[in-house]
Image (cartoon, rainbow, N blue to C red; front, side, top):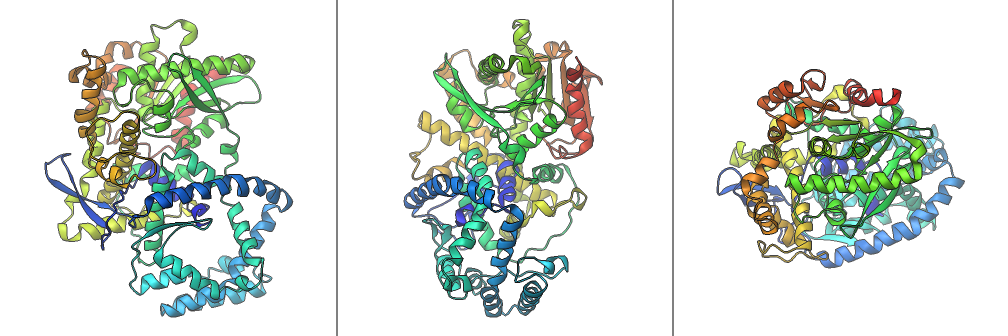
Length: 632
């Protein structure tokens, strides 16, 4: 299934959703793949080009087919894959996969010749000869160890090389995402593929490849609010990248580029730790809802760390799981819930339809944690000896405010330690900084803006995360990095608005949000900056709920400075921030230094926002902030 094309690409997809790029679909086509979107973020009337994936006029049909494909993956492929993997160990499956790739040499040869790619023709021929002989009919791949290049061309790429740009996104039954160009190409490639002539060789090879994608697929569809939209965007980029030459040039480092270095802690080391997570639910009786949580329990009694992820992140997002693994490897049990700005939390635990107002958000988090802690301790009281609350980014901001509010709670309801990592001081100002990042392409000359945006997107689509090393750096200049981060945030905000509108229509949007057709709604919602969201949606809604919740009141609740005296007294609070975090001003860090002092605050000189969490030195500081709980 092409829809499950996630083994090597899944982390590139995750990088796209967690920390970087964003796209917005439009029913009409655009020859250059960009469209002008008016935004009043900074200057009224400023036009920001937004990447536009392959047009999707058949969206209702395509989304319906994607559900059928999902059911096939869950109901057929997943259960049978367990037995298949049990019978055939990974080394055997690897050999089958390599042999299947090797035997498809004629199709790659034909397409390299059709593109007049003589270097690719030579490389593929050399690879085929080496792997067919020394590699025992392709069961092994000595050609890669010898440094022989690959040129995996197909007929869809050949059509693209000849100038055929896709105009129609298609979700094919069983085969997954495609377009009219690649559908024709797929049929043509079948004639040049030897396994097609020897049933059941082709389906057996396809199934063997699909088995590798079961775990990434489930992770992908579980953690993303709309996997269909993200997959459409990725496939549009990936297929365009296949026929676009993008050069990688090392760029100077700054806070935005360092922020994108979060890719390094998203590197795939298998799904073993992720698959060990237990996921359960607990009823929030006062809200009439049920919230899900995931946890990793140590085999012996140990402290439990409750982990709050960053802005818009799912409890099992790759970055959140990476932090959980660091804590678990240090000896802690770890439990996590989704962020308040993730649709799962909005549906299952929020008392408000619009997150971003800290006062109700913090109470929702505290209410959810109380229910979860009670449930988990009823079953594992002998395995939980101490408790800490750790939050990252927006989760760190909420952690700090939970600590402030817990002072008035009974002692048995408080945590033994609170740790805020990369927390903003003013949530509102931090979000406006992300709005500015969204408009960063306007600093490029109008005549080159399209090409530079598209090249940044192509670079992101081409990143092979598993082969990157931190000393290699990333191939983005500062403006490209800002552009990618801004769109990543805008995606999360779009998902928040969409989920809110599904629960309660604000009357602000012309389109009617529906599950089966979202393009028009997405296009309209992507125009909303955080400032628009705050002024046009959050403030009016808050005042409808409580007349005392004025604009000033909401603003004050989003600023830690208003809690200065309370925070200064929190001896069990630790904060770990970066001096060059674009969500935190130098004045903010100076304020934290005065209030917390060196014993409760660690400031790194680098990393941007969460861009240094992959480094052992930073991880050791995170662990040290709660390590003493292991010894008490």
